[in-house]
Amino acid sequence: MDLTLAPVTADNWRDVADLAPHDEQRRFVAALGARYLLLGVYGETWHNLGVFEGGTAVAHVMWGVDDDGSHWIGGLLVDAHQQGRGIGRATVEALLDGWRADRRLVRASCHPDNTASRALFGSLGFVETGEWDDDELVVERQL
Image (tube, rainbow, N blue to C red):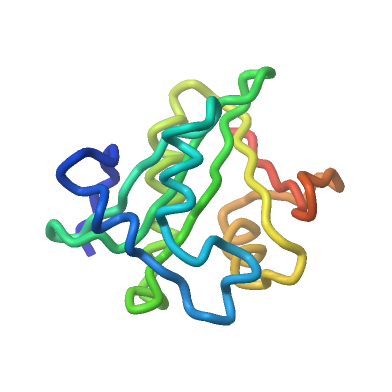
């Protein structure tokens, strides 16, 4: 699998906006990538990245930096037709690799019932902190 994480631009935003999870996942993530794109465009926290395989949008992820300097991963949405291939894992690993030189504290959050997300972050060395961000558990990993 040859994935590229790239900024969302005028040339690719429509493909990223149309990404959608499985119906049963919509209680954990946005129904469409478009919601996350808007958070990145109109909010002050998030930066959007599209995840592409051979020019095809397969996932979306947001990242941001908190006031304490920690990096956050948010809005990880793998298109329903692309799931089960390791795209989520490869996306998080690529972000971690990019931040490793800065030895950052990296955080993310996930709904407590989202067993797939909790397992993914746990398998990548993230630990649950006991903190909550709205209705989601906070996980973190020191690079």
